[in-house]
Image 1 (cartoon, rainbow, N blue to C red):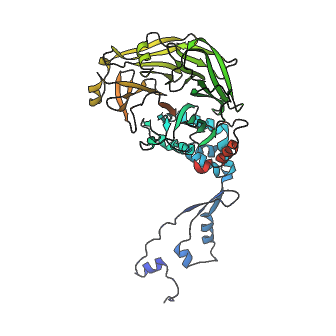
Image 2: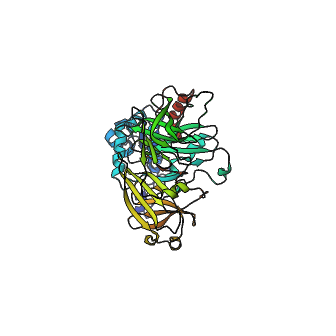
Image 3: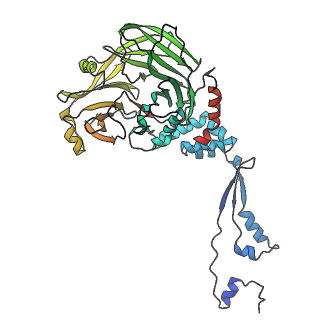
Length: 493
């Protein structure tokens, strides 16, 4: 007879005709990570089974071998950089920059330009190579610039569906505090606070930002008004921004043969003023949405002529006039201050898209392309009548013969798509050039009465963050603030 204190083995009980106990569940693996150690290590352990706890056998080497085989420690430094590169480059951008805080090895690897190039090449060859794209409403109604950065968070662009992004609610738009998105260049955004006028440059991905110093002091008897701010940046072979310039022009109330402008350079950290002779007298378009950037050259719209172009990196500094297509509706352009035309860059091409303001016009859409930039030669791309238009939307189909369209933006990746606002339906439509089709692109949430190319700016979320170059001798305290933000990137990203 077995002693009452001696445990009965399950197989013995079964042989004696007793009830057989069910097999124990498989041991659960626990994966733990310790950050307290100097060298990061992963440790995987299998807890001992109930039988091992109730029937320990110190003389048995089998139990010791099982525990040793199922408890191991792995040093992250033993992971080859090539394998780590393959793993990290396939993670979302948000996770990659958080993992820079894991250890020095990971931070060093992610910070190398070769990692950026590998990440770009990998994303370019993937099926999801198209970067998120939105049309931003220029005005943001918040009290602090840090709140503007919160509205730029990458989560706002995760949806694959197109939309016009209002960064402020309808209730916030009744507030007096107001920021304005002025320009974008290689992932950097130029913003300003309206009254008092303060300029900011930020990277919406890492949420780094700097405040530009005030402009040059003019004579006591001269207080010019500047507007039409634009920005141009330069990148190196690793697609990292190395420098940028911010340019603004003086608003003159009469015809002038000079273009007066101020330019801030990140290489010098100072504002410089220029007075450039124009080939012809010009009057700047007061209600323009800021200059367009094409090939690193800024273009401001002017009455009667077209555009005045200025290359901020050219030396010596000069400007030139580029006329608009001669066949355009100049009378309508003058009467509506250019509201029904769109001139902008699209995939390395400068396009001029014109919409007829009245339904009785024979052509509803016309477009030209600047084929010869040096000589200012425009080539007609197409002319479309209202009877040529079609749509799969029944309600929109009923409005095609009389709807009023206002151009907003070209698609940054698709040469076939132009976005417009349909005034009567209060929605955004996309015009497909090849098959002359008009479709509803999205419904708008926000105030759309003034929605036009003047108050929107196309923005492509960059695949890789764009560190903001720090100008020399910035405004007092700006450098230390930026350094603190660099240290908090991983926590706030």
